[in-house]
Length: 120
Image (cartoon, rainbow, N blue to C red):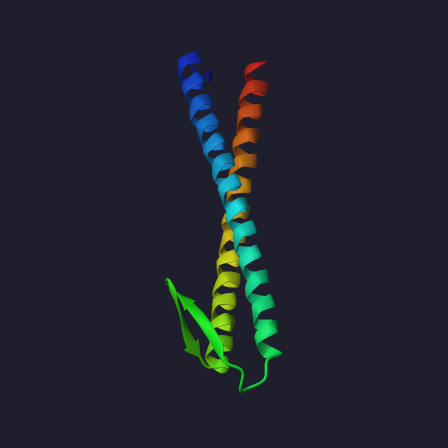
């Protein structure tokens, strides 16, 4: 049973649109992962620096346009929680990236199959 040309063309267009959308999202996810990885490195570096400070050293955190005193252990706790949250986000983005790459690959394979079967 043969599929009419118009229906086949519409199917190819839908699959192509899906592949293009997946490719765009892949690029966005990769950029987001890179940004979050930079943030994690920065937080880890800051945490290392804070750990090296004496216990009685005054530490100030930026809040908007001003700085407020914060105990060293509170700063360390906040840095640790922010780092853990970012790592969790990166893990979720990695899963999304894998899904999008699979979707893109499958879309391309389906288009190739349609053209190969149509060539027969």
